[in-house]
Image (cartoon, rainbow, N blue to C red):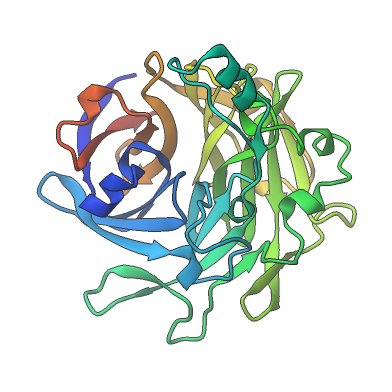
Length: 354
């Protein structure tokens, strides 16, 4: 991987205290701005250009925009952001959590922690967040816009969520009760093309094939979404991708293609790659993508226990030049933390179209 430049992302003290900057899980560009999310909160952050890169953080609480199924401050583990039309889309991981074992834990404590599995309800949402420009001309999230667009959610309290929809699925249902880091069900990427959402799964990886779900959300009632039938009466379509045994860590559309950030489904360091799924957005049937349908665009570096690439976003640039891809990292290495309030992202040149 050849890094063209490094970009500083600057966060305010509250975000630093919440560790948002070192737990980045999703990023999407919006003109000159960036939308980012961390996996430890229930917020979306907007960053705007500054003298170092991006800063001037503005925080938007999901609970102020849509009805969450859990407490307002419970983490939503947002793992994907997508921007299209008048909306920003956000998706939770829809995953269970097994307690982490730390090197300082005794054997007895480690065994106890490995037996504990937790479910946070806010992880089980797909949110459509209305965007309009504020008085300063910058995009902001709002419950309702001046022209009548409204924020809405799929997975509100007492209503079906994506895991419920998949409860009888022949491929994915057995993995819904397995925690994310155990190759269980775990959404970690989101892209939108027209009216269609693509949700990439970090897990499960099925005999080496990763899974991408195609969804078609539609308005069900004020503030509520449902999934329209898309494939033989089902409210979803499945695609299986040969990513050399890796799972999806993020998705990013580029024309009719989808760029796929791929990494291990389990709690491992690497390898990490960006693949191009050619003509992904023009398919109208389930696909088994392999061979020349998938090409490796970039091999990303990774650390030992740190520097895990978690999000990618195309940056605006000249139409006649190669596209640039911004890469953000979870558990950033120490060299990415020059100051308490700053984390460093990479900009890499993307081969291929654009």
